[in-house]
Amino acid sequence: MRELTPTEKGAIAEAKIYAAAVEAGIVVARPLTEGRRYDLIFDVGPQLLRVQCKTAPRHGDVIALRIATSRCTPSGYVRTTYAATEVDGIAAYCPELDECFYVPIEDLAGRAFLHLRLAPARNGQRAGVTMAAQYRLGAVAQLGERVTGSHEVVGSSPISSTPSSGADVVVGAHAFRERFGYWMQLAAAGTDVVVSRHGTTRVRLTQATPPAEKAV
Image (cartoon, rainbow, N blue to C red; front, side, top):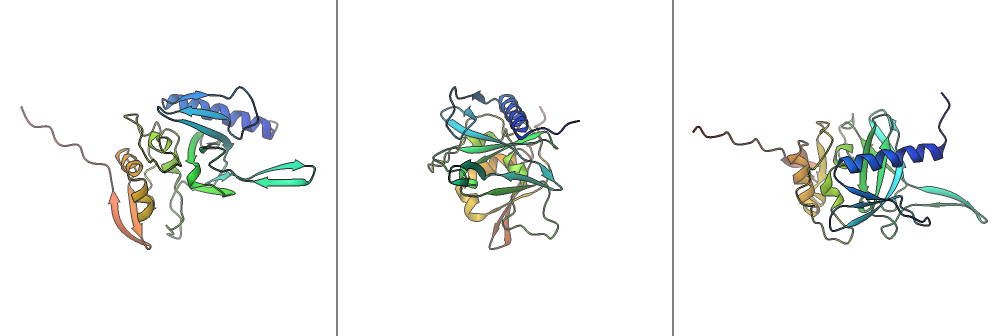
């Protein structure tokens, strides 16, 4: 079987992301003209999000998302990253898992790479580790947040169309406060959220057990 070209890989990623978003209940549109850095538009209720699509291969327990781009100009190669003025988030398709992920721009602005872990680090490191579970496309709460600082969670849509991996998500206390609604919905969907401060675990947020029904 011949190797796919970068253009073909990009087309597949965009089609997979389009389908995954629709399955998650998101209205998706494509721009009619070119010239912008986003490929799709996600309508998540009161907001329209500009989304750049990427292919992100799996390497062991890590999904490698390359964010930087490179293009040839008369002055030579120009390497750039993405800014909040250009896109609202990056959607990534992992061929090995056949899964899609969405990362808000505020979580990656200015970065060239982002590694999403499928399992905790073997050396036990938690600081600076980004778990893939919190970015699965379909976690609608993450799509309802804007980089303007208005952190509102979208209505009653299901938090995820994909089952949790079972791995804990570790988040710092500051990030937990800033996006409390998102972490709460993530825990409600079955992924335990561990809140740390200065490298020490302080709180674990977990799915509530439904109350037993009273006998009639």
